[in-house]
Amino acid sequence: MKITILAAIWAQNLGDELILKNEIQFFQHKFGKDTQFSVFTYDIKQPFIVWKNIKYYEYFPCNAKKISKVLRNIKNFFNFLRVIKRSNLVVIGWWGIFFDNESNGVSHPLKQWLFRVKVCNYFKKKICFHGVGISIKQKDNLPTIRQIFSWTKSEVTVRDRYSQDLLKWLWINSKIIADPVFWDNGHTKGALKTSYCLDQIHPKQFHIEDIKAFNFEGKTVWISFRSGYFWDEEKTMNDIIQYVLSKNGKIILLPTSFHKVNNSSNDYIFLKQYADKYKLEIAKNMWQTYNYFRNQQLDITFAMRLHSVILSQTYKIPYLAISYAKKTDEILKIIKMKSR
Image (cartoon, rainbow, N blue to C red; front, top):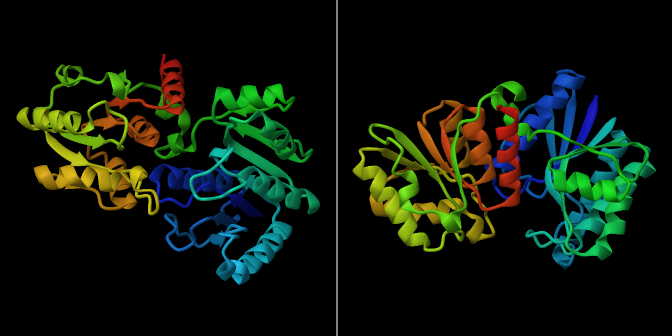
């Protein structure tokens, strides 16, 4: 069995990489250990998962406006045709993959996805839209979305109610499935059986009083925040760190995003200034962050990134969810509903 995955990985984000890892394991379990995977990504130089049955390819087009990339794009174009032609199944991977615009400089992302789907259709390949998310702000783009999802040889699962409702409005049936990272420590049902969420707070409403009910004595506390969401970010960070340390808690700063282009999305850059100021331990790469979860070396997490919430829930680590996004709110609703 040969499966091609069109993935949403390229920005050194732990959540995206773990989605791919667990997707591959899902399809490997479904079709057998001998299944071979071809994964298309925007970054082939630093893959998170390196297994013998995975081969990485660069998306076409890549920086198409640059003359210096012409030969590279010609190679990528023919690689894409060759790989799709040889595939038994094409999986368009998880996450918010269908946007009006994207931060990686792609000028017409929906047109590019339509092109990729048309190539699959030309070669009569079945497409599995696996837990995809949709965020469309311009109504003029809805016909393109309908074209992308309307091929007869496709099955569609989505990650949230919003995406399902939008597709339903376009007369396209889909069902919601759980985020693959819930599978990271075993079966999804096990991860959702009990809620480990201590509380849910919006960052704009956060106050130091919100954590004073917690016992930090001798506890290892992970702080996983991203920049730009608290009212007074510097004061909030200082207050949290100083309070936990004053209660004899140990703090580890665990970034989940190490974005190479957008510094505002790079959690490591943001958290490193506090690691230096208070001489705190900080994970320096995705594997270090991931291993803290896998080894369950944390007693409590302050989780802002979606996948810091999911990993805390999956590895049964109590967490305070500081939710700044609708996608996190929806996941927390699912956790609350499933754990009743």
